[in-house]
Image (cartoon, rainbow, N blue to C red):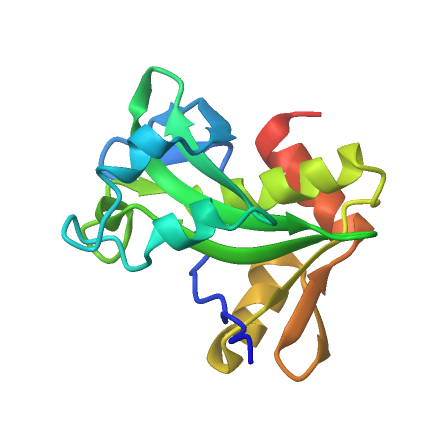
Length: 173
Protein backbone atom coordinates (compact mmCIF):
# COMPACT_ATOMS: atom_id res chain seq x y z
CA UNK A 1 0.00 0.00 0.00
CA UNK A 2 1.28 3.44 -0.91
CA UNK A 3 1.56 5.80 2.01
CA UNK A 4 0.20 9.24 1.18
CA UNK A 5 2.33 12.04 2.51
CA UNK A 6 0.47 14.67 4.44
CA UNK A 7 1.80 18.16 3.82
CA UNK A 8 2.86 19.98 6.93
CA UNK A 9 4.27 23.36 5.87
CA UNK A 10 3.38 26.66 7.48
CA UNK A 11 2.59 29.58 5.21
CA UNK A 12 4.35 32.31 7.16
CA UNK A 13 2.98 35.09 5.00
CA UNK A 14 2.27 35.84 1.38
CA UNK A 15 5.11 38.11 0.39
CA UNK A 16 6.19 39.69 -2.87
CA UNK A 17 8.93 37.10 -3.16
CA UNK A 18 10.85 36.11 -0.10
CA UNK A 19 11.66 38.57 2.66
CA UNK A 20 14.66 38.70 4.93
CA UNK A 21 13.19 38.56 8.45
CA UNK A 22 15.74 40.96 9.97
CA UNK A 23 16.06 43.61 7.26
CA UNK A 24 12.64 43.28 5.61
CA UNK A 25 14.39 43.32 2.21
CA UNK A 26 12.63 41.45 -0.61
CA UNK A 27 14.64 39.18 -2.89
CA UNK A 28 13.76 38.06 -6.40
CA UNK A 29 13.60 34.30 -6.75
CA UNK A 30 13.78 31.60 -9.37
CA UNK A 31 12.21 28.18 -9.23
CA UNK A 32 14.13 25.60 -11.22
CA UNK A 33 14.46 21.84 -11.35
CA UNK A 34 16.43 20.29 -8.51
CA UNK A 35 19.64 18.66 -9.74
CA UNK A 36 21.49 15.54 -8.69
CA UNK A 37 24.31 17.84 -7.57
CA UNK A 38 21.89 19.67 -5.22
CA UNK A 39 21.08 16.41 -3.47
CA UNK A 40 24.61 16.21 -2.05
CA UNK A 41 23.83 19.07 0.34
CA UNK A 42 20.12 18.35 0.88
CA UNK A 43 20.36 15.57 3.45
CA UNK A 44 19.06 14.61 6.87
CA UNK A 45 22.60 15.27 8.13
CA UNK A 46 22.27 18.90 7.02
CA UNK A 47 18.93 19.07 8.87
CA UNK A 48 16.49 18.62 5.97
CA UNK A 49 13.45 16.68 7.22
CA UNK A 50 12.77 14.60 4.11
CA UNK A 51 14.80 12.29 1.95
CA UNK A 52 14.60 14.25 -1.27
CA UNK A 53 16.48 11.54 -3.20
CA UNK A 54 13.31 9.43 -3.04
CA UNK A 55 11.25 12.21 -4.64
CA UNK A 56 14.01 13.03 -7.14
CA UNK A 57 14.33 9.39 -8.26
CA UNK A 58 10.58 8.86 -8.74
CA UNK A 59 10.08 9.25 -12.49
CA UNK A 60 6.44 10.34 -12.01
CA UNK A 61 7.50 13.38 -9.99
CA UNK A 62 9.12 16.70 -10.78
CA UNK A 63 11.17 18.27 -8.01
CA UNK A 64 11.87 22.01 -7.98
CA UNK A 65 14.01 24.24 -5.82
CA UNK A 66 13.48 27.86 -4.87
CA UNK A 67 16.59 30.04 -4.98
CA UNK A 68 17.33 33.73 -4.71
CA UNK A 69 18.40 34.99 -8.16
CA UNK A 70 21.55 36.58 -6.75
CA UNK A 71 22.44 33.37 -4.81
CA UNK A 72 21.41 30.50 -7.09
CA UNK A 73 23.49 27.90 -5.24
CA UNK A 74 21.60 28.24 -1.95
CA UNK A 75 18.35 26.27 -1.88
CA UNK A 76 15.63 28.13 0.05
CA UNK A 77 12.93 25.48 -0.32
CA UNK A 78 11.88 22.45 -2.37
CA UNK A 79 8.62 21.11 -3.77
CA UNK A 80 7.74 17.80 -5.40
CA UNK A 81 4.80 17.70 -7.80
CA UNK A 82 3.02 15.24 -10.06
CA UNK A 83 1.22 16.37 -13.19
CA UNK A 84 -2.17 14.67 -13.16
CA UNK A 85 -4.88 14.70 -15.87
CA UNK A 86 -6.45 18.03 -14.90
CA UNK A 87 -4.56 19.38 -11.90
CA UNK A 88 -1.16 19.32 -10.21
CA UNK A 89 -0.63 17.23 -7.10
CA UNK A 90 1.69 18.71 -4.49
CA UNK A 91 3.48 15.68 -3.01
CA UNK A 92 5.93 17.28 -0.63
CA UNK A 93 7.08 20.78 0.27
CA UNK A 94 9.87 21.82 2.61
CA UNK A 95 11.59 25.06 3.48
CA UNK A 96 15.34 24.95 3.98
CA UNK A 97 16.27 24.28 7.62
CA UNK A 98 17.39 27.90 8.03
CA UNK A 99 13.93 29.09 6.92
CA UNK A 100 11.98 27.22 9.61
CA UNK A 101 11.10 28.27 13.13
CA UNK A 102 11.76 31.40 15.14
CA UNK A 103 15.31 31.85 13.85
CA UNK A 104 14.35 31.60 10.16
CA UNK A 105 16.22 33.84 7.72
CA UNK A 106 13.56 34.25 5.02
CA UNK A 107 9.78 34.39 5.11
CA UNK A 108 7.52 33.56 2.15
CA UNK A 109 9.16 30.36 0.91
CA UNK A 110 6.09 28.04 1.11
CA UNK A 111 3.77 30.63 -0.45
CA UNK A 112 6.23 31.16 -3.27
CA UNK A 113 6.41 27.43 -4.02
CA UNK A 114 2.63 26.97 -3.94
CA UNK A 115 2.18 29.99 -6.23
CA UNK A 116 4.64 28.36 -8.65
CA UNK A 117 2.51 25.21 -8.69
CA UNK A 118 -0.61 27.27 -9.42
CA UNK A 119 1.20 29.16 -12.20
CA UNK A 120 2.32 25.86 -13.72
CA UNK A 121 -1.26 24.59 -13.48
CA UNK A 122 -2.49 27.60 -15.48
CA UNK A 123 0.27 27.04 -18.05
CA UNK A 124 -0.81 23.40 -18.46
CA UNK A 125 -4.44 24.44 -19.02
CA UNK A 126 -5.64 23.22 -15.60
CA UNK A 127 -7.12 26.59 -14.56
CA UNK A 128 -4.74 26.87 -11.58
CA UNK A 129 -6.01 23.74 -9.84
CA UNK A 130 -3.65 22.07 -7.38
CA UNK A 131 -4.40 19.32 -4.88
CA UNK A 132 -2.74 18.00 -1.75
CA UNK A 133 -3.28 16.01 1.41
CA UNK A 134 -2.96 18.13 4.54
CA UNK A 135 -2.18 17.24 8.12
CA UNK A 136 -5.55 17.50 9.88
CA UNK A 137 -4.32 20.21 12.24
CA UNK A 138 -3.34 22.45 9.28
CA UNK A 139 -6.55 22.31 7.24
CA UNK A 140 -7.84 25.61 8.65
CA UNK A 141 -4.41 27.21 8.20
CA UNK A 142 -4.39 26.33 4.48
CA UNK A 143 -7.95 27.57 4.06
CA UNK A 144 -7.00 30.93 5.58
CA UNK A 145 -3.49 31.40 4.17
CA UNK A 146 -3.83 29.93 0.67
CA UNK A 147 -7.56 30.14 0.09
CA UNK A 148 -7.55 26.34 -0.27
CA UNK A 149 -10.80 24.39 -0.19
CA UNK A 150 -11.29 21.41 2.10
CA UNK A 151 -12.62 18.62 -0.10
CA UNK A 152 -12.93 15.39 1.90
CA UNK A 153 -10.98 13.81 4.73
CA UNK A 154 -7.60 15.50 4.58
CA UNK A 155 -7.77 16.30 0.86
CA UNK A 156 -7.62 19.94 -0.15
CA UNK A 157 -7.40 21.81 -3.41
CA UNK A 158 -6.67 25.28 -4.64
CA UNK A 159 -9.17 26.42 -7.25
CA UNK A 160 -8.91 29.05 -9.97
CA UNK A 161 -9.65 32.24 -8.02
CA UNK A 162 -7.37 31.40 -5.10
CA UNK A 163 -4.68 30.23 -7.53
CA UNK A 164 -4.90 33.46 -9.52
CA UNK A 165 -4.41 35.53 -6.33
CA UNK A 166 -1.32 33.53 -5.38
CA UNK A 167 0.18 33.77 -8.87
CA UNK A 168 -0.44 37.52 -9.08
CA UNK A 169 1.12 38.04 -5.65
CA UNK A 170 4.36 36.26 -6.44
CA UNK A 171 4.75 36.59 -10.19
CA UNK A 172 3.32 40.07 -10.90
CA UNK A 173 1.24 38.77 -13.79
